[in-house]
Length: 129
Image (cartoon, rainbow, N blue to C red; front, side, top):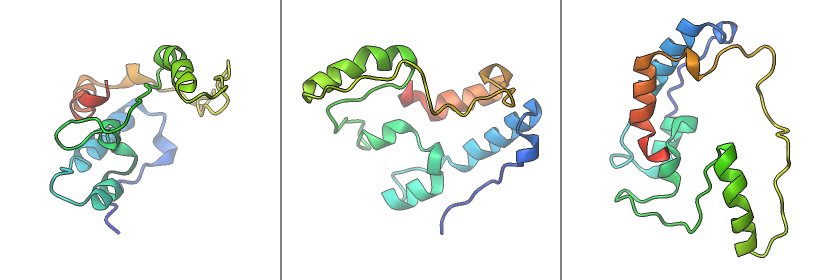
């Protein structure tokens, strides 16, 4: 009910100017404070744009889970085996990604983001880096 989606025009998703404009609008729209609303309302309002640190820390920045894995390829491949060992699990990562959405129709990358968009991302997700 509280979700205020800014619809993405899927016919324009490979246009650099559209990417920048849409993401900037979306990031500005989802900048509500988690301290001023319930957790449920905050997550409904921000959806997938919720900073990941908000799932693992309190308002005071105290981490309340034991393990945090970063999902970049280098960190995940380095840290995942230690986590599995800690829980006595014999699970290994696949050598190749099997769920990637990137394909030959995807033309845009982080290189297509303008400096204003990059600054917004760094501000909103500073705790995730």
